[in-house]
Length: 237
Image 1 (cartoon, rainbow, N blue to C red):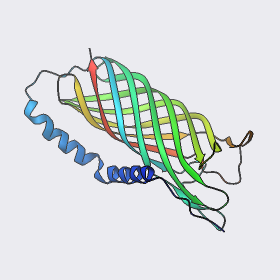
Image 2 (image 1 turned 60 degrees about the vertical axis):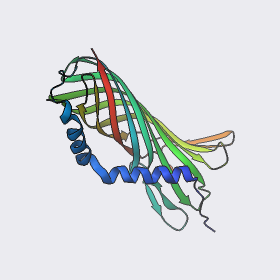
Image 3 (image 1 turned 90 degrees about the vertical axis):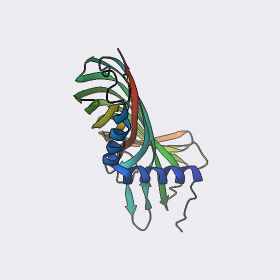
Image 4 (image 1 turned 120 degrees about the vertical axis):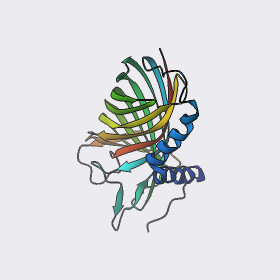
């Protein structure tokens, strides 16, 4: 008989937080940032060349890939729900309109499935990428677009054991950034990253045994992923 797994409260809270971030959206964030920066409109011109250090904190959501984000059948039912997301980027702005750098992204999932021995506890995707970002600087605003090829690893962990399902391989990250400099060097804004995975091989670890397949009968990985949230950092020329 299918059974329902119990999720830790921390994962449920992270999932609720992620959905709240989505509902707010970037337009409201941009309006708030414009209000924040208005009192300092006459401050020094922003530094837009040099080393740039950035952080991202917010939520993550599943997007269907080779594996779906939802199953509904007699043996396997449930979905891969949103959760917490974060990341960091270290880059170099040789020109005010372009950034090159390296990025790391961590996107969590909250898998909720029942049936077919699918007692997952949590899941995560780790992505390392080379970032190329063209930027349109307007007044104190930076309007950017991340284009970042890289490597991604997605792992679904089972409850109460070291068993897991995973996939890894090439990934492509793209998405917009909207930032406003609130001081000469520091900015705050919003970012959305879409991570598209090309992995075909899916591996299942059960105890000391591992089975991998390019065409599994049923799998929760690999999916694509969306990361979104607060983007903040500074440029040090």
